[in-house]
Length: 256
Image 1 (spheres, rainbow, N blue to C red):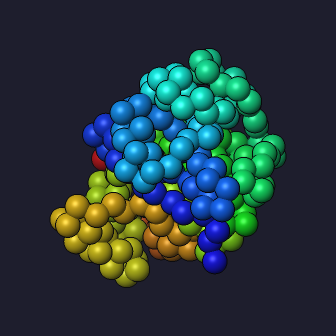
Image 2: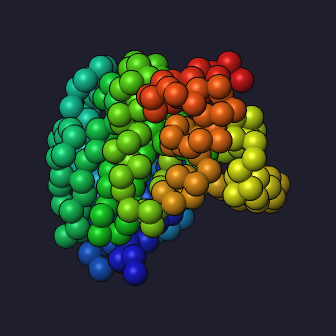
Image 3: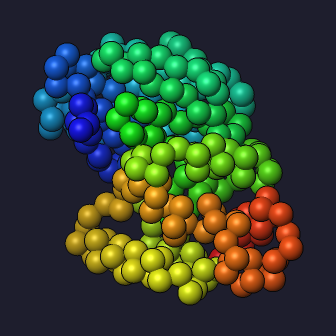
């Protein structure tokens, strides 16, 4: 049973932020801060005081509100070691295999360069929860801006190795577009078809499609399914290695 409380909130056009709250100590962390007002408003709504801010990567829609929130709350800011562009306001930095403690729980850091070279994920093994930033989305993965397909495939494999029950919080509401693309490369996947239909209904009701689980993503997310025989046949890549199949799926999504 989860010890922490989680509060997902939208900001900008399609981003999600998350608050992580320990009801015993009162400690509260937030993942990313692209818009200070949205984060401060979520804290006010919940009646929680921010103690930590965790940054996944340097893109403005994840960092633009950082300094304002830090000044307003006095929170500790944790983020990636500087691998691409500097992030002003970081107090502590981490990279692959690093960890820190939040409210008595170990938070592991998984580096997943590809979308950017400074991308990190925050893994709460004791809570079976991971915050994947712009690496892994519901039915999708991040566009490759600073890395290359081989780097991104290696990064995704780290997440694929997490326990199937792991809850995946990603940073954007891209799911309907992702579902449409997924069906274009994995059209006979009955589980994917059912999931896509469910998401259509959820979005029609204004409900978020985040979080998901690693088991659901492994079963339906084409970017994690490079070894699947049906996808390989559909792509005409039966004899290719997994990295090449992933690269072709990513190339197709970029032009979809």
